[in-house]
Image (cartoon, rainbow, N blue to C red):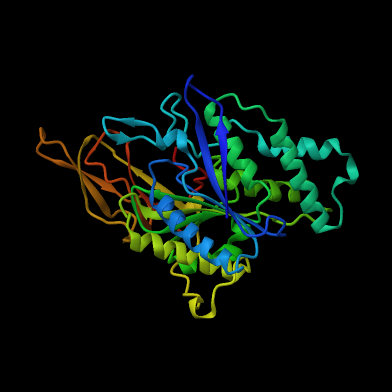
Length: 378
């Protein structure tokens, strides 16, 4: 194992912030796996699972059972980790700007990669899929090398992308407020990620070709899809299989859950050939709990009025269109306001707020029918 530290530009004189990454396996290996946790810095189940994963990877490496280059960043957002107000950690947004740490709008990664490819001339991409993979990854590295971050946050994103851009597998570990295990990925690579969903016991799979949210997993995965569309005559593989993995809710934080999740990821890495688990540790793949739904079928249910929130459903419940999923109580008025499900679907996440303002998100429902919804929450 090699521990590497990446310093970020100093935002305040006299301070220094670093990203710490752990590297396992042969550095010259053909395959590379990149796993990061807590990009939303107050979402800690992924960090605990990554800590468990690092312990197991170090053990496997000592037995020469790590076949791929594997990079794990358990706390990938030290900037958000240091933010707190009145003992409450604020890690989803940059408090200075309000920018969501999982929205990489400041880096034109695909456009810059395309510009680097076009600068090489017409023969840059051809019929050799492996050659194209190497050419595109070189262009990605060149694009990142030329990029000049304009803030600490952009420097953070730049450093993380530099580690992830040439990986075959990228897992971004998150969690929701109150939620079941679920994950997001591209429909074109779903079948390759399905075994991971099986071992994790994911109860909800949400697929979208491009949510336009500039989330980390899409930033590294969609360039391959876009290049394939731009150059249909070239053999361009979907060389980066990336997913956002939501490890239940923020309070589902225990050694048991973390060990279970780390073990599930290891089973998947064994399935891919990136690690070789001892035979007695290999588990059969469980069945998939639920088929994917499109992101366009999701409903974010918001409060139609202000009031005390009394939820009528829990994460993991199925609802029908028209069902009452919550009530809003204004103690100064005699009547309550029902909150109605707009779709048939699966409640996979609940905000858990106790008092809601008008328009505040309350829960998320995944539906099978396309509603034309294309974006993720802020």
